[in-house]
Image (cartoon, rainbow, N blue to C red):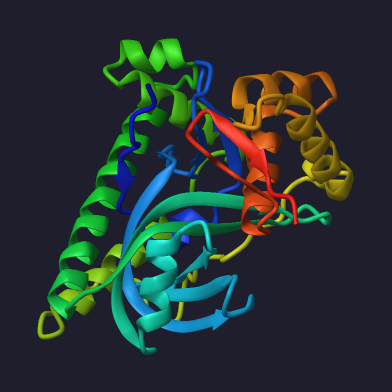
Length: 301
C-alpha cells in the first residue's frame, strides 16, 4: 500500500534550482526531485503570496496556473480538473492573497535541456499572515539543518551511501546526499545562507540581522541548464507511446496497471522517471487520469 509522502517545507530557490530525479527502489515507488542539499522531495507544503493566477483552460475544463512568492523566489503551480478541490479554491481566490499549498512536485524537461519545476496542488487554502510567518520560520530551520547535515557529509570525504550511513546518516539522507554531490558537485552555501538572512529579516524587521549579504546579491535561479544529452529527444513520440501502451493494457475498462505500463515503457526505451514525467503531462492535458493509485486510464473524447 502506498503511503503519503512527507510534505517538505523548503524555499522556492532550493526547489527550482534542482534537476536530478530518482525513483524509489521498490515497485510502484514514487519519484523524487533531489535538491542540491540532498533533500529527496516528492511533496511540499509551501506558503506565500499568490501574486498571479490564470485559467488557460476554460470554464468546463479549467487549467489554472499560478505563482506564489516566498522570501526570495516563486513557486509555480498548475491545477487541472483532476484536482477539483484545489481548482475550486484557486478560482475563488482574489490576487494577491496569502495561501498555503500542499502538493506534489513535478518537473518538465524542455527539448533544450532546461528543467522546470512546478507544484501540482492537492489543497490550496487562504491563510493569515501569521501562518505564512510560521511557515517561513519552519522552512528556514529546515534549510539550516540541511546545510549543517551537508557540511557534515562533506567531512566524511566519501559520497557512497554505505560510508555516509556508517557515519550516522539515515539511508534516505545518504541516498539524497550521494545523488546531490555526484549530480551537482560541491554546493555553494552562499545563496542558502542569504535566504535564511532574508527570512529572519522578514520575521524580525526591527532587529539587526546581518550575515554579510546585501539585499541585492545572491538570487536563486528559477530554472537551470542541464546537459542537453539528458533532455528528452522526442517528447511527442513518448507521449504517443505511453498513450498506446495504456490503451493496449486497459483490457477490462478499469485502466492499465501502472506496473505493466512501466515494464512496457521500459522495454520501449522510456525510463521510469520519464514515464512519471510524461504521465503527469498527459494528466495535466486531460488525456489520462488515475482511477486509483495503481492504474492509468486514457480519456476518450
